[in-house]
Image 1 (cartoon, rainbow, N blue to C red):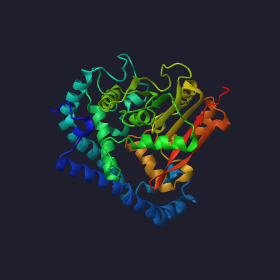
Image 2: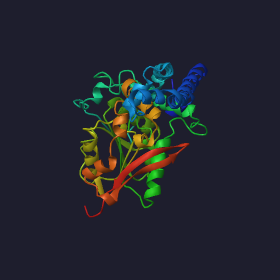
Image 3: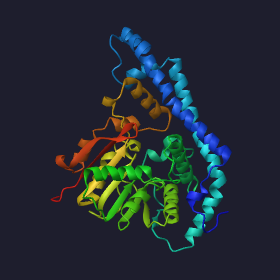
Image 4: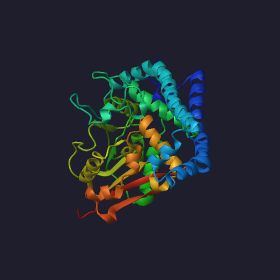
Length: 379
């Protein structure tokens, strides 16, 4: 069991065999989403597109027609089964590590709970997550994000955290960094600074903070700011609170719907989200944007980073594989978000046209979709 000196970053250490399995799953995912998916694109160009055009008199125009073109392809079926299996293996492999380490995590949480807390953890016993997300296993995480009533352990947060670590290791992002390094939090702060170099927030909100590891980046960057993370998932928030306390960070967490957070008007100078909106349904997204507008102080910034999969930027094969993820792999709003006109939704939420921004920032060898607005001083 851990001593008083053992922090969670030291406790989360997959064994030799676990590391080997993590590496295998990461490599498998890299292959099926890279070289194997590239072979699908080649097959489409050389075989499937001409065959579809011959039958229908035109080439596939969208993801649905593209899916019809791919449906009988054995290579497409192999790709889909490989993606599905790799997702199963990811949860199984990470689950083995988390199950072994959970007693040490729980012991560290108990040790921290015996001290005066640095930040708040506000959970609501009667909170009911909105439909349909409470019935969906996002990313096909076994049991979903919420778990059975009365369960207070760290398992669900640990499992999500473990998959992030697996991906970081597979992509080489963990080299020279600590376990749980908030890379995407730092990336979003960089996006803020590139656009608004005068940003010096005193109150920060992380919408859809998940297990809270990225929220730490905001407190580290602005140590004098009041920082809050909001999420639907009590298990994730428990993990986030424990993680922040372990890091010595005074960060507050609240269980709330991002459409109705319960904070007063104009409380925050900076509101951020990371991959929130591609897990948000069409009828919920406008309410989140309106709530962000309400919560921002004059001059406050609302910024979001999400998947750069808008269909006008993608080939038909890529649209097809993304659509497959929506139907089969726990990404139910992925393409729905990609179809959303976020600038129009921001305008509908109350932001003025000259306050709104949306574009693509470089990220590694690719790009990331960054969008939001700065609330005017006259509002």
